[in-house]
Image (cartoon, rainbow, N blue to C red; front, side):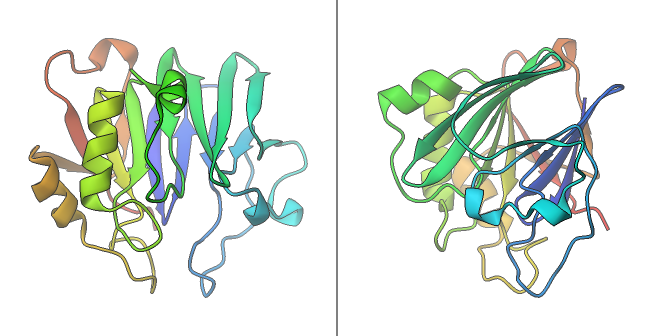
Length: 201
């Protein structure tokens, strides 16, 4: 599997057979993305789904529930109006918190995402999780790989904290990559890996 960051809270998951998009839209109203084509598209905020921006063959998920699409398993739960998802893709479990705010994850919420291999979560503050809140969530979920989103880089003109605030708070050395290529056998077994992706141009 490859994970690419398109900026903002928009990620792309690719393997040899499928493409899965996470929040394929911009949080900056001044920046527009062209029509996208994928097998599956997830939206953590259902109000952001615009049908004419998604290829009609794409399977769109914008609400809680359980879904199976061509060997991809997706479980969604709504917390204070925001959907969070657990995606099983390429035999790995990825938790995507989207535009998660300042609320605390309950034990019931953790049943969905606890022990995920990869965790993508906002760290830039404002209306979304702060660095300190993100570190607390990571401690609850205990993933093998953490990918921060919604920080200053790749957020256009939206005000957000620098990712280095999160890195300092987390206390784990970060690895900066253009994209993350990962397979189940390559998942770190001892220490958690922090990956900061560069936004795709």
